[in-house]
Length: 84
Image: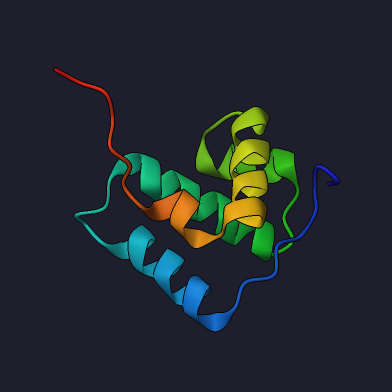
């Protein structure tokens, strides 16, 4: 996949990503992921998304790729994390 490949979002995925970005209760990392995917869907390049979101280009590439492979759930769903 090209580094700046555009993502095609259906209306339902776009609405959910926009909801995550707007919600005050959203976790910071989920908002970052949602902004990355929305930026890619809007045709922005990797460097521009990274600058706007405030993350590395590597992070942009990672989440763009994960969305393409696994869909919305991979980006905005909470996963069980190791802990105490």
